[in-house]
Image 1 (cartoon, rainbow, N blue to C red):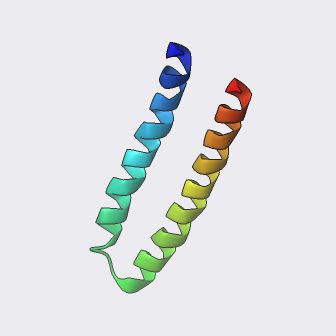
Image 2 (cartoon, rainbow, N blue to C red):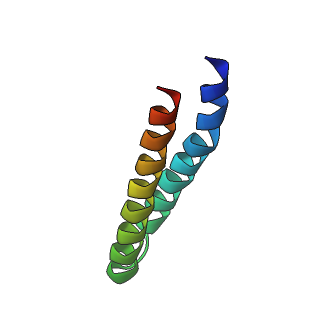
Length: 59
């Protein structure tokens, strides 16, 4: 049960980076805010997909 936690660490790092970038994006003008919002949601969806794949591979 220890190995899955180590595999999830990089994903948690990515998520924290995404959170930081969203907070930074909030200070930017509206156009770049919308752009970064789409990029972040796209990345987040991919991370969630990868996360689900990882969970399924451990089942």
